[in-house]
Length: 393
Image (cartoon, rainbow, N blue to C red; front, side, top):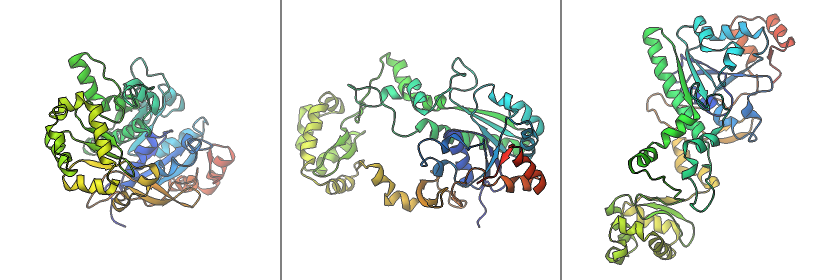
Protein backbone atom coordinates (compact mmCIF):
# COMPACT_ATOMS: atom_id res chain seq x y z
CA UNK A 1 0.00 0.00 0.00
CA UNK A 2 1.35 3.42 -0.97
CA UNK A 3 2.25 5.87 1.75
CA UNK A 4 -0.45 8.50 2.10
CA UNK A 5 0.11 12.05 3.39
CA UNK A 6 -1.83 11.61 6.67
CA UNK A 7 -0.80 8.03 7.50
CA UNK A 8 0.69 9.20 10.81
CA UNK A 9 -2.31 11.33 11.87
CA UNK A 10 -4.94 10.18 14.37
CA UNK A 11 -8.32 11.93 14.39
CA UNK A 12 -11.05 11.62 17.02
CA UNK A 13 -14.46 12.33 15.54
CA UNK A 14 -17.00 13.03 18.29
CA UNK A 15 -19.29 14.90 15.91
CA UNK A 16 -22.84 14.13 14.83
CA UNK A 17 -24.82 15.18 11.78
CA UNK A 18 -23.01 15.65 8.46
CA UNK A 19 -20.42 18.46 8.59
CA UNK A 20 -18.13 17.03 11.29
CA UNK A 21 -18.20 13.41 10.08
CA UNK A 22 -17.62 14.59 6.50
CA UNK A 23 -14.54 16.54 7.62
CA UNK A 24 -13.24 13.36 9.19
CA UNK A 25 -13.95 11.39 6.02
CA UNK A 26 -11.91 13.84 3.92
CA UNK A 27 -8.93 13.32 6.24
CA UNK A 28 -9.49 9.55 6.30
CA UNK A 29 -9.32 9.48 2.49
CA UNK A 30 -5.82 10.95 2.80
CA UNK A 31 -4.73 8.23 5.23
CA UNK A 32 -5.64 9.54 8.69
CA UNK A 33 -6.76 6.97 11.25
CA UNK A 34 -10.17 8.46 12.04
CA UNK A 35 -11.92 7.04 15.09
CA UNK A 36 -15.65 7.68 15.05
CA UNK A 37 -16.63 8.06 18.70
CA UNK A 38 -20.30 7.08 18.69
CA UNK A 39 -22.91 7.23 21.46
CA UNK A 40 -24.94 4.14 22.34
CA UNK A 41 -27.18 3.45 19.35
CA UNK A 42 -24.82 5.19 16.92
CA UNK A 43 -24.43 8.65 15.44
CA UNK A 44 -27.53 10.58 14.40
CA UNK A 45 -26.70 10.23 10.70
CA UNK A 46 -27.33 6.49 11.01
CA UNK A 47 -30.92 7.26 11.97
CA UNK A 48 -32.14 9.85 9.46
CA UNK A 49 -32.32 10.11 5.67
CA UNK A 50 -32.31 6.34 5.51
CA UNK A 51 -28.94 4.69 4.83
CA UNK A 52 -27.79 7.08 2.11
CA UNK A 53 -25.69 9.48 4.23
CA UNK A 54 -23.36 7.06 6.01
CA UNK A 55 -21.32 5.79 3.01
CA UNK A 56 -20.41 9.39 2.18
CA UNK A 57 -19.33 10.51 5.67
CA UNK A 58 -18.14 7.36 7.48
CA UNK A 59 -15.92 5.68 4.92
CA UNK A 60 -12.39 4.69 5.91
CA UNK A 61 -13.17 5.12 9.64
CA UNK A 62 -13.11 2.88 12.68
CA UNK A 63 -16.05 3.00 15.10
CA UNK A 64 -16.04 2.80 18.88
CA UNK A 65 -19.16 3.25 21.03
CA UNK A 66 -18.64 5.14 24.30
CA UNK A 67 -21.31 6.45 26.66
CA UNK A 68 -19.75 9.81 27.50
CA UNK A 69 -22.29 10.30 30.30
CA UNK A 70 -20.82 7.35 32.21
CA UNK A 71 -18.15 8.27 34.77
CA UNK A 72 -15.99 5.38 33.64
CA UNK A 73 -15.76 6.88 30.14
CA UNK A 74 -13.38 9.61 31.31
CA UNK A 75 -10.35 7.33 31.46
CA UNK A 76 -11.10 5.91 27.99
CA UNK A 77 -11.45 9.35 26.43
CA UNK A 78 -8.26 10.59 28.06
CA UNK A 79 -6.47 7.49 26.79
CA UNK A 80 -7.67 8.20 23.25
CA UNK A 81 -6.76 11.88 23.46
CA UNK A 82 -3.18 11.23 24.61
CA UNK A 83 -2.04 10.13 21.15
CA UNK A 84 -4.58 12.00 19.00
CA UNK A 85 -3.64 14.83 16.65
CA UNK A 86 -7.00 16.32 15.67
CA UNK A 87 -10.43 16.22 17.29
CA UNK A 88 -13.79 17.15 15.76
CA UNK A 89 -16.99 17.84 17.70
CA UNK A 90 -20.23 19.69 16.96
CA UNK A 91 -21.62 20.24 20.45
CA UNK A 92 -23.47 23.42 21.27
CA UNK A 93 -21.72 25.71 23.81
CA UNK A 94 -21.59 24.14 27.27
CA UNK A 95 -22.19 20.53 26.21
CA UNK A 96 -18.53 19.63 25.79
CA UNK A 97 -17.79 21.00 29.25
CA UNK A 98 -20.53 18.83 30.77
CA UNK A 99 -19.16 15.77 28.98
CA UNK A 100 -15.57 16.51 29.96
CA UNK A 101 -14.35 16.85 26.37
CA UNK A 102 -13.88 20.63 26.27
CA UNK A 103 -10.68 22.13 24.88
CA UNK A 104 -9.30 23.30 28.22
CA UNK A 105 -9.61 19.81 29.73
CA UNK A 106 -8.24 17.89 26.77
CA UNK A 107 -5.39 20.29 25.98
CA UNK A 108 -4.07 19.66 29.49
CA UNK A 109 -3.79 15.99 28.54
CA UNK A 110 -2.39 16.65 25.07
CA UNK A 111 -1.01 20.20 24.56
CA UNK A 112 -0.42 19.54 20.83
CA UNK A 113 -4.06 18.62 20.19
CA UNK A 114 -5.87 20.46 17.39
CA UNK A 115 -9.43 20.79 18.67
CA UNK A 116 -11.98 21.68 16.00
CA UNK A 117 -15.45 22.92 16.92
CA UNK A 118 -18.08 22.58 14.17
CA UNK A 119 -21.31 24.27 15.23
CA UNK A 120 -24.35 25.89 13.67
CA UNK A 121 -23.61 29.51 14.55
CA UNK A 122 -20.21 29.45 16.24
CA UNK A 123 -19.36 29.54 19.94
CA UNK A 124 -19.81 33.31 20.28
CA UNK A 125 -22.39 35.80 19.07
CA UNK A 126 -26.10 36.24 19.81
CA UNK A 127 -27.12 33.03 18.00
CA UNK A 128 -24.51 30.73 19.53
CA UNK A 129 -27.01 28.84 21.71
CA UNK A 130 -29.37 28.09 18.85
CA UNK A 131 -29.52 24.61 17.33
CA UNK A 132 -29.27 24.51 13.54
CA UNK A 133 -28.97 22.29 10.51
CA UNK A 134 -27.97 23.04 6.93
CA UNK A 135 -31.23 24.61 5.66
CA UNK A 136 -31.31 27.07 8.57
CA UNK A 137 -27.82 28.27 7.66
CA UNK A 138 -29.01 28.74 4.09
CA UNK A 139 -32.00 30.71 5.37
CA UNK A 140 -30.07 32.92 7.82
CA UNK A 141 -27.26 33.77 5.40
CA UNK A 142 -29.55 35.03 2.64
CA UNK A 143 -28.56 32.12 0.40
CA UNK A 144 -32.12 30.77 0.44
CA UNK A 145 -33.52 34.19 -0.47
CA UNK A 146 -31.49 33.99 -3.70
CA UNK A 147 -32.57 30.47 -4.64
CA UNK A 148 -35.66 29.62 -6.68
CA UNK A 149 -37.99 31.50 -8.99
CA UNK A 150 -38.86 35.10 -8.10
CA UNK A 151 -42.61 34.49 -7.88
CA UNK A 152 -42.33 31.56 -5.49
CA UNK A 153 -41.10 30.92 -1.94
CA UNK A 154 -37.33 30.96 -1.29
CA UNK A 155 -35.92 27.49 -1.87
CA UNK A 156 -33.44 25.31 -0.08
CA UNK A 157 -30.59 24.25 -2.34
CA UNK A 158 -31.16 20.57 -3.02
CA UNK A 159 -27.91 19.42 -1.40
CA UNK A 160 -26.34 20.16 1.99
CA UNK A 161 -23.92 22.80 0.74
CA UNK A 162 -23.42 24.43 4.16
CA UNK A 163 -22.61 21.06 5.72
CA UNK A 164 -20.11 19.97 3.07
CA UNK A 165 -18.60 23.44 2.74
CA UNK A 166 -18.10 23.56 6.50
CA UNK A 167 -16.55 20.09 6.39
CA UNK A 168 -13.99 21.28 3.84
CA UNK A 169 -13.27 24.42 5.88
CA UNK A 170 -12.84 22.34 9.06
CA UNK A 171 -10.52 19.91 7.29
CA UNK A 172 -8.18 22.52 5.80
CA UNK A 173 -8.18 24.69 8.95
CA UNK A 174 -7.42 21.69 11.16
CA UNK A 175 -4.58 20.58 8.91
CA UNK A 176 -3.18 24.13 9.01
CA UNK A 177 -3.30 24.05 12.81
CA UNK A 178 -1.78 20.57 12.81
CA UNK A 179 1.13 21.87 10.71
CA UNK A 180 1.67 24.59 13.34
CA UNK A 181 1.55 21.97 16.12
CA UNK A 182 4.14 19.85 14.30
CA UNK A 183 6.50 22.82 14.19
CA UNK A 184 5.93 24.16 17.69
CA UNK A 185 4.28 21.40 19.77
CA UNK A 186 1.47 23.88 20.40
CA UNK A 187 -2.06 22.80 19.64
CA UNK A 188 -4.99 25.16 19.34
CA UNK A 189 -8.73 25.47 19.07
CA UNK A 190 -10.28 25.84 15.62
CA UNK A 191 -13.84 27.12 15.15
CA UNK A 192 -16.07 26.64 12.13
CA UNK A 193 -19.81 27.02 11.70
CA UNK A 194 -22.52 26.35 9.15
CA UNK A 195 -23.64 29.99 9.13
CA UNK A 196 -20.10 31.28 8.61
CA UNK A 197 -19.70 28.93 5.65
CA UNK A 198 -23.04 29.89 4.09
CA UNK A 199 -22.22 33.59 4.61
CA UNK A 200 -18.84 33.19 2.92
CA UNK A 201 -20.61 31.78 -0.15
CA UNK A 202 -22.76 34.93 -0.22
CA UNK A 203 -19.85 37.38 -0.10
CA UNK A 204 -20.36 38.95 -3.54
CA UNK A 205 -24.05 39.54 -2.83
CA UNK A 206 -23.27 41.30 0.46
CA UNK A 207 -20.79 43.51 -1.39
CA UNK A 208 -23.32 44.32 -4.11
CA UNK A 209 -25.92 45.31 -1.53
CA UNK A 210 -23.40 47.47 0.31
CA UNK A 211 -22.44 49.26 -2.90
CA UNK A 212 -25.89 50.05 -4.27
CA UNK A 213 -28.25 49.55 -1.33
CA UNK A 214 -30.57 47.33 -3.35
CA UNK A 215 -31.64 43.94 -1.99
CA UNK A 216 -30.99 41.36 -4.73
CA UNK A 217 -33.87 39.13 -5.72
CA UNK A 218 -34.20 35.50 -6.76
CA UNK A 219 -33.23 34.90 -10.35
CA UNK A 220 -34.30 31.29 -10.77
CA UNK A 221 -32.35 29.43 -13.42
CA UNK A 222 -30.95 32.58 -15.03
CA UNK A 223 -28.51 35.30 -13.95
CA UNK A 224 -28.87 39.08 -13.85
CA UNK A 225 -25.20 39.73 -14.57
CA UNK A 226 -25.37 38.83 -18.28
CA UNK A 227 -27.57 37.27 -20.93
CA UNK A 228 -28.21 34.76 -22.25
CA UNK A 229 -27.79 32.48 -19.29
CA UNK A 230 -30.04 29.72 -18.05
CA UNK A 231 -31.86 26.52 -18.92
CA UNK A 232 -32.95 26.12 -22.54
CA UNK A 233 -35.10 23.46 -24.11
CA UNK A 234 -34.04 21.36 -27.10
CA UNK A 235 -35.91 18.78 -29.13
CA UNK A 236 -34.97 16.19 -26.51
CA UNK A 237 -33.46 17.25 -23.16
CA UNK A 238 -32.61 20.67 -21.68
CA UNK A 239 -29.19 22.30 -21.56
CA UNK A 240 -27.63 25.04 -19.45
CA UNK A 241 -25.82 27.79 -21.32
CA UNK A 242 -23.91 30.83 -20.05
CA UNK A 243 -22.29 33.74 -21.90
CA UNK A 244 -20.45 35.96 -19.40
CA UNK A 245 -18.39 37.59 -22.19
CA UNK A 246 -19.52 39.25 -25.41
CA UNK A 247 -17.51 37.01 -27.72
CA UNK A 248 -19.28 33.97 -26.26
CA UNK A 249 -22.64 35.38 -27.34
CA UNK A 250 -21.23 35.77 -30.84
CA UNK A 251 -20.14 32.14 -30.76
CA UNK A 252 -23.65 31.02 -29.78
CA UNK A 253 -25.04 32.82 -32.81
CA UNK A 254 -22.41 31.25 -35.07
CA UNK A 255 -23.00 27.76 -33.66
CA UNK A 256 -26.66 27.74 -34.72
CA UNK A 257 -26.28 29.95 -37.81
CA UNK A 258 -28.27 32.79 -36.30
CA UNK A 259 -25.99 35.73 -37.01
CA UNK A 260 -29.18 37.76 -37.42
CA UNK A 261 -29.46 37.80 -33.63
CA UNK A 262 -26.30 39.91 -33.53
CA UNK A 263 -27.93 42.49 -35.80
CA UNK A 264 -31.13 42.66 -33.74
CA UNK A 265 -31.05 45.93 -31.72
CA UNK A 266 -32.78 44.15 -28.83
CA UNK A 267 -29.79 41.86 -28.46
CA UNK A 268 -26.87 44.09 -29.50
CA UNK A 269 -25.20 44.44 -26.09
CA UNK A 270 -25.35 42.49 -22.85
CA UNK A 271 -27.46 45.27 -21.30
CA UNK A 272 -29.83 45.08 -24.27
CA UNK A 273 -30.09 41.34 -23.92
CA UNK A 274 -30.79 41.62 -20.19
CA UNK A 275 -33.51 44.20 -20.81
CA UNK A 276 -35.10 41.95 -23.44
CA UNK A 277 -34.21 38.65 -21.81
CA UNK A 278 -37.68 37.07 -22.03
CA UNK A 279 -37.86 37.70 -25.76
CA UNK A 280 -34.30 36.47 -26.25
CA UNK A 281 -34.87 33.26 -24.31
CA UNK A 282 -38.11 32.59 -26.19
CA UNK A 283 -36.30 32.91 -29.53
CA UNK A 284 -33.48 30.68 -28.34
CA UNK A 285 -35.87 28.02 -27.07
CA UNK A 286 -37.61 28.03 -30.44
CA UNK A 287 -34.33 27.78 -32.34
CA UNK A 288 -32.85 25.13 -30.07
CA UNK A 289 -35.98 22.99 -30.49
CA UNK A 290 -34.65 22.19 -33.97
CA UNK A 291 -31.76 20.27 -32.43
CA UNK A 292 -31.42 17.19 -30.31
CA UNK A 293 -29.55 18.00 -27.13
CA UNK A 294 -26.32 16.19 -27.99
CA UNK A 295 -26.15 17.71 -31.47
CA UNK A 296 -26.64 21.20 -30.07
CA UNK A 297 -24.03 20.67 -27.36
CA UNK A 298 -21.55 19.44 -29.97
CA UNK A 299 -22.07 22.63 -31.95
CA UNK A 300 -21.72 24.84 -28.88
CA UNK A 301 -18.67 23.00 -27.55
CA UNK A 302 -16.97 23.11 -30.94
CA UNK A 303 -17.41 26.87 -30.76
CA UNK A 304 -16.03 27.07 -27.22
CA UNK A 305 -19.35 28.02 -25.61
CA UNK A 306 -19.87 27.11 -21.92
CA UNK A 307 -22.86 24.76 -22.05
CA UNK A 308 -23.79 21.49 -20.41
CA UNK A 309 -26.45 18.86 -19.98
CA UNK A 310 -29.03 19.42 -17.24
CA UNK A 311 -28.76 16.02 -15.63
CA UNK A 312 -31.02 14.24 -13.19
CA UNK A 313 -29.52 12.70 -10.06
CA UNK A 314 -29.72 9.32 -11.76
CA UNK A 315 -27.86 10.55 -14.82
CA UNK A 316 -25.19 12.34 -12.81
CA UNK A 317 -24.72 9.29 -10.55
CA UNK A 318 -23.67 7.27 -13.60
CA UNK A 319 -21.82 10.03 -15.46
CA UNK A 320 -18.71 8.42 -17.00
CA UNK A 321 -16.61 11.53 -16.43
CA UNK A 322 -17.23 11.48 -12.66
CA UNK A 323 -16.55 7.75 -12.50
CA UNK A 324 -13.32 7.98 -14.53
CA UNK A 325 -12.02 10.66 -12.18
CA UNK A 326 -13.05 8.66 -9.11
CA UNK A 327 -15.36 11.38 -7.80
CA UNK A 328 -18.13 8.78 -7.73
CA UNK A 329 -17.18 5.21 -6.96
CA UNK A 330 -18.56 1.97 -5.58
CA UNK A 331 -17.80 1.09 -1.97
CA UNK A 332 -19.01 -1.55 0.43
CA UNK A 333 -21.85 -0.26 2.58
CA UNK A 334 -22.55 -1.16 6.22
CA UNK A 335 -24.69 -4.10 5.07
CA UNK A 336 -21.93 -5.48 2.84
CA UNK A 337 -23.63 -4.42 -0.40
CA UNK A 338 -21.85 -2.34 -3.03
CA UNK A 339 -23.19 1.22 -3.25
CA UNK A 340 -22.30 4.44 -5.07
CA UNK A 341 -20.69 7.13 -2.94
CA UNK A 342 -18.47 10.17 -3.42
CA UNK A 343 -14.83 10.67 -2.50
CA UNK A 344 -12.68 13.68 -1.60
CA UNK A 345 -13.03 16.21 -4.48
CA UNK A 346 -9.31 16.73 -5.04
CA UNK A 347 -6.74 14.70 -6.97
CA UNK A 348 -3.16 14.40 -5.69
CA UNK A 349 -0.71 13.00 -8.23
CA UNK A 350 1.76 11.39 -5.78
CA UNK A 351 -0.37 10.69 -2.71
CA UNK A 352 -3.95 10.31 -3.92
CA UNK A 353 -6.95 10.22 -1.64
CA UNK A 354 -8.32 6.68 -1.63
CA UNK A 355 -11.18 4.74 -0.12
CA UNK A 356 -9.77 1.66 1.57
CA UNK A 357 -12.93 0.60 3.38
CA UNK A 358 -16.60 1.43 3.53
CA UNK A 359 -18.42 2.73 6.61
CA UNK A 360 -18.11 0.61 9.77
CA UNK A 361 -20.99 -0.84 11.72
CA UNK A 362 -21.76 0.95 14.98
CA UNK A 363 -19.05 0.00 17.47
CA UNK A 364 -17.40 -2.41 15.04
CA UNK A 365 -13.90 -1.56 16.30
CA UNK A 366 -14.61 -1.02 20.00
CA UNK A 367 -12.69 -4.10 21.15
CA UNK A 368 -9.87 -3.50 18.69
CA UNK A 369 -9.33 0.13 19.68
CA UNK A 370 -9.45 -0.56 23.40
CA UNK A 371 -6.99 -3.43 23.00
CA UNK A 372 -4.62 -1.16 21.08
CA UNK A 373 -4.65 1.17 24.07
CA UNK A 374 -3.75 -1.44 26.65
CA UNK A 375 -7.12 -2.79 27.82
CA UNK A 376 -7.12 -6.57 28.25
CA UNK A 377 -10.09 -8.81 27.47
CA UNK A 378 -11.33 -8.84 31.05
CA UNK A 379 -11.27 -5.04 31.32
CA UNK A 380 -13.06 -4.68 27.99
CA UNK A 381 -15.72 -7.19 29.08
CA UNK A 382 -16.27 -5.24 32.30
CA UNK A 383 -16.73 -1.99 30.37
CA UNK A 384 -19.21 -3.67 28.02
CA UNK A 385 -21.13 -5.22 30.92
CA UNK A 386 -21.33 -1.81 32.63
CA UNK A 387 -22.68 -0.20 29.43
CA UNK A 388 -19.75 2.21 29.21
CA UNK A 389 -18.83 0.92 25.76
CA UNK A 390 -20.64 -1.27 23.25
CA UNK A 391 -19.29 -3.85 20.84
CA UNK A 392 -22.50 -5.68 19.94
CA UNK A 393 -22.11 -5.20 16.19
